[in-house]
Image 1: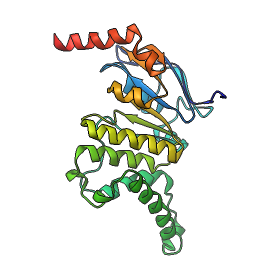
Image 2 (image 1 turned 90 degrees about the vertical axis):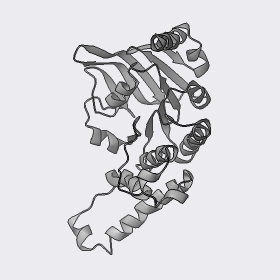
Image 3 (image 1 turned 180 degrees about the horizontal axis):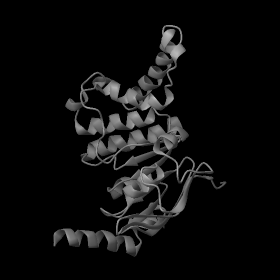
Image 4 (image 1 turned 45 degrees about the horizontal axis):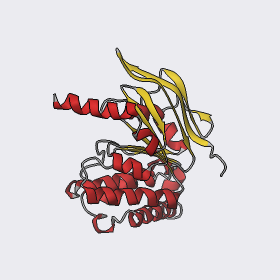
Length: 262
């Protein structure tokens, strides 16, 4: 089998916040079409990696390349237009809006209204809106959100809200989808549903997925490869079986548990 080219490459990325060295020369290479896991105890630097890739907190050292292009200093909206979408660790949906309207917000980077489009709405703009809605409706079907599509988002259970956030990211038509702890707060049944939807989305949309997750069973089941961080450093890399059996990984998690128990 031919080795797949990396779609995302982080080369010795470092980031400081004041006196805190949040990332210490982290290097990650994710192949096109792969589900790649990024794991580690709380405070290990996982979300800082995501914020560096998406342009919210660019690295002070190192380079980030996406599909061969250097995006290290790109602004978040430019990175989104290249085809990188994300969900958030803490749900970031819009209260007071329906499920459908929240999902439609994911299409904003593809909607470019013009003066002529506004003037001749029924000729051009309506046609564009119909095309946008078609993808949204397909995504609602894919993630089985038909029963809540018109419900106010604030009355939708947490597990379904996570699914709505995934739908909003998918309708942006990303090439790389970053999922920041998509199963946080879910019960076992909800986790199994979400895992299936992630696999279905990769298959149907041809996605590459960067998965940040605490649940090791999920990472082992879904990911082709993974990296483990601890205190901003990379302590293991490889297949889930190899990485999770690494003594440094075992120590990082057992040490974290001991600290919490103290």
